[in-house]
Image (tube, rainbow, N blue to C red; front, top):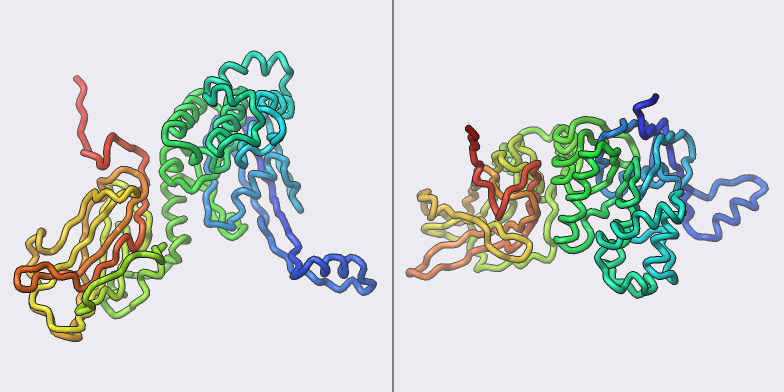
Length: 416
C-alpha cells in the first residue's frame, strides 16, 4: 500500500492576461489568430509529495502560488498541465466559509458541507455535537450565515473542517483568524491531529507555526519550486528571498563603507512618526540576524544586531543612541541606550557620521514587535531629542518553543 497521501507531479497553472475585456473577444474571433494576451504562470512545473502522517507547510512571498497549489490539490482549480494524486479523504479550509450558502442557516451548512465531502446524514449526525461544541456560537447556529460576524463564520467553518475525521487536512491561513482563545483551541486540535497521525498540508505566513508544527516545508517563489527541506533550512532561505539578501555579502561592512539603503531591505512603517530638532539625523538603520542578513525576522535564542547610522548636522557634546521594542499593543517591552550601557561617546562635530550597533540575544517570545530608534542628549540638564523614528519597523520573532509571558527565562530543567 502506498505511503504517499499527496503527490504533485509537474503541475503548472497558466493564466492569460488581457489589458481590457474586449481583447479577449477580439482574440477569439480573430481570423489571423493574433495574440492579444500575455501569459502568466501562477505555477510553473511544481513537483512534491506529502507522505501519510506528515505535516508539511507551504511558504513563500505574496504571489508565490501558495493558495493556487492548494486549490489545485483540492480540486477547486484544474491545472494547465501536470497531475495531482490523492490517497485519502480530504477536508479543506481554503477561504473563510468557502462552500457555505449565505442563505442557509449554520446548521444547514454543516449538513451541506458534510454531504459535499461524502458523509451520509447519519455520519454527520454522529459528529454534530462535536462540531457545535467546537464552534461555540450558541443559538446563531439556527440563523442564516449571512448574518454572522467574520469570527462566527470562521468558527463554524473550522469546526466543520476539523471534526469530520478527515485523513488529510488542508488549511490556508485559517489558523490566524478569530480571537486569541479560538486560535488556541484550533492549535490544540491541530496538535491532536498530528499525534493521531493525520496528514496535514497548510499555507501560512506564521513562521512560528512552521517551525513548531511542520516536519517539512515546501518553499515557492514567483510560481517556481524554490526548495523542499527542513523547517529551519526553508525559513532561512525564505528570509533571504524576502529581503533580497541572497549573496549580499557583509552587510555590516557595507553600512560602514557608506551604503545608505540598508533599510530598503526591511518592511518599513511608512506612516511612522519622525521628529526631533534635526541637529542629528538617523540616515539609515537595519535589523540583522546572526548571519549578518538584514531582515525583519529573527529566530528566538539567536544573537541579532540593531544598527543605525547617524549624521551630525551640528556639533553635539554628548549624544545618546537608543532603541526601544514594544509589543503590538504599544507596551514597551525592552530597550536600552548608550548611557544605560555606560558607553562613553566622544563629542561629535558637524559632518561626523557614526554607525552604532546593539548586539544581543533574542529572548522575546515568538510574535510581532515594533522597533523605535533615537538619538538624544542632555542640554543644560534637559533631555533633547535630535531625531527619533517611532515604531519605524516591525521585528517578527520566530520560535519552535514559546513559554509564558513576554520573554523566555531559558531554563535548564532536571528531573531526578
